[in-house]
Length: 457
Image (cartoon, rainbow, N blue to C red; front, top):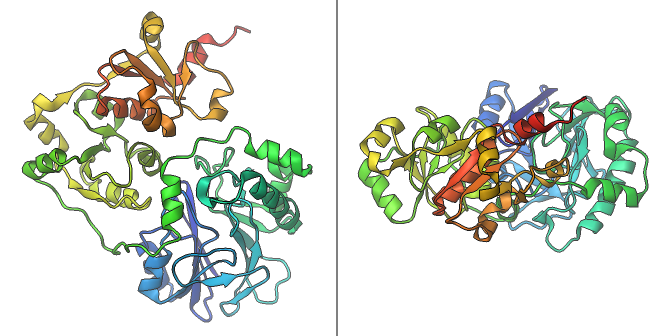
């Protein structure tokens, strides 16, 4: 058996290639949209991709099922409750997919979404205990998939939560302890609240250490799973909807062009926005007015989906040599309106000094001197805020900031903070792009404040 996990740190997203060496047949599970790595690996290993399985309609990224089907002729499989616009293979509980010696078996595990499935992987066709289970967003390492996302319009969180309880507590926990667990996401994903940084586990480990896998009633499960979930980025509904549709395909070798100063000026004049993907300190040292900073050194794609809309035309300002990677990461969430990139960003900023400003960033002692005179905004997630807030702060999670910016006074100083400073710098840049005249972010964030104000022992 050939079994490969592919992991994207930017989206905390895992996909899988499962192949049979004797027959050369393979299936890809939960693929991302840029599919070259799957194709290259299959070619190198002498495999033909005959099928593509999505464990559910993903909300946090655009799946590459259509691209893979076009390139390989593979069938597309979803749980039988799915109803996409394109032709698909309905997969029901107990269905077997024979790759030769390697066998896959479908387990219906609804709850994160109605059509969610897990995929049991048997290394040999007659094995009684599976090698592992690809759990999609039903079971994570340390957590389970949240039942409250908007990906399942028409089904309530309570209905999905009850389905998830049965899927996790009965079906997945009914597997043997030694079965390996391979989820679709890891730490940082907004698809759950307590995901581990580990990339794989076992059913036995999850039975012992996962809070949602402990024996409990349905009511207790619903309460503990729904409490403190992170605020979902605005692009989630867009992606979940697009993943059900026939849509424009991304070329395997897609690139975006370098733009001249005149082309940049024309694009900005027509309403485009600059995505500054440089490091945060570079942005702070001098940024182009109207640009929004989402550095490529963090959770760029998901965060970009919080502060940009899919319809916006985007010009990329990225570290030299990183322009195509930034465009690819935006395309992974369906943001295809990238016009091109600014080559040699520092030279461009020098040529346009009249449009460049430094960004204000405050140390904790500076904040404490002006705290009563500013609008202090905590942009962390609900679970983080439950641990405490800086005195006088208001809570507006970063994903809600675009819709709630009108609640703030644009001519009064604003200071944003998060846990460590990365997200608040993004939020501050967004408000500046919206015309707020005096915006700062707190260096070190809540972590710096809590360390300073921790009770003495």
